[in-house]
Length: 160
Image (cartoon, rainbow, N blue to C red):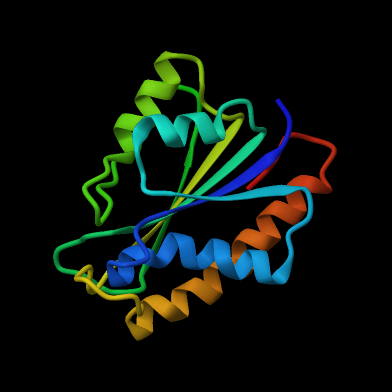
């Protein structure tokens, strides 16, 4: 397995659901050499195709929670064993757990998969993120850049 990918999931025309693409956009502006930066609407097959064969895949998505705490970040490292079931319903209806399970069953999980899920405040039509979610974009970009840098400069498998 080679390579690192950061996948920003979401629809930039649905306010806070655009969080994932916003994080990827900020990482592109800053420059993240040797890491693939991609966006996705969250289709299961698209995610699996993007992360398959990678040493490290980082997925960033907005989620709906009740009660919501917009901007709150949840981080989950997913392993290869079936006991590590990731359950996260994205703000666009995606169940990342299904994508992870399908990839696991078909042998298409990356070496390491790290999911960042950020609670959304508003997924209505529009292009601007709410203030708390916008602040999470900057924090996440910083954290993900550090994780990617550490994985690129480590002699052992990507540790996050």
